[in-house]
Length: 264
Image (cartoon, rainbow, N blue to C red; front, side):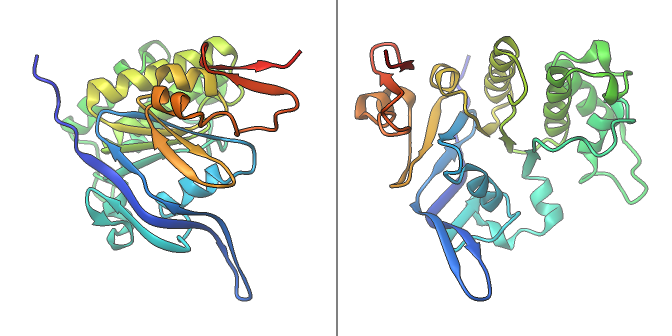
């Protein structure tokens, strides 16, 4: 079987992120140079408050960059209209679903909004894509349930299915494993890994599940106060990139096991 060719889906050049007001500019991180390819699962990790959500909001055009450039498929992010961007990028946030009275099928179908006409009519192609997204995320058995009837793990799979139905090259998720137990954290990340490979998608997610991310991701983006680096997990371990993620008084990274250990 021929290996799928990898293309650059998102890249940044000397990007600085933060907040601007009339009186001041606060830079959270600077000199960010990332290159994300098709077929990759990429984890974004770092301590609380380091700027992970700010980075995700910036590369998804939710908030402006301080300086530098962001490209999706070699086209400047700021040159995309909202509709054009919705066909390239899907975003899964941790916020509560606006209407949990929707059925699973109805919520997943919302992923087709960028492609439907003004009355929202679904074509046979739309229906096929929706059904495929439901099948790939293993939620066929709950597709007629209302969203308020679902567990957190089930709802997260539904939100991923909606992103799949949107049929974008890039899927970005902000902490998709929040509120899940360890089994369902691993399940969701394994599912994302499979979807990236099977659909040749670029999937980027932020997470505090560092041990799982090291095991499952093709690349990791590590944010610290000093810099933002991206590489394969094995290379990052070799470089000692995990050693300064957290204060050293309580936990330490063990290179041999590739995980954090509580100090005795």
